[in-house]
Image (cartoon, rainbow, N blue to C red; front, side, top):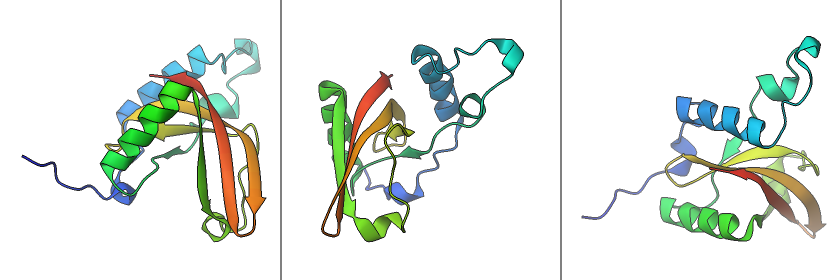
Length: 128
């Protein structure tokens, strides 16, 4: 029996599994190392954006598997897709598989613009 195709743009990334992943990721990546008397930082309180790469769940799953194996990855997209807000080095995000399950916390390491394309490189900071 073939799995039904899922529109990745319809996946709700604000769910309990994502919150649990973020709690573990920020602990293992030592993002909550400030003493408690300073209070929670914005990074501790607000999880980074979550995303999946690919046009099908299978493509997303293959991308995630490659990223986890190499502990790094890159994406290429049209500059127009960024609406004038290019990613910055050091920014964190949560990479999800084709089902919307969070699989890795990644950090942007480099952003290159060539013509009208943007190549965003990142490294895995934590993986589930």
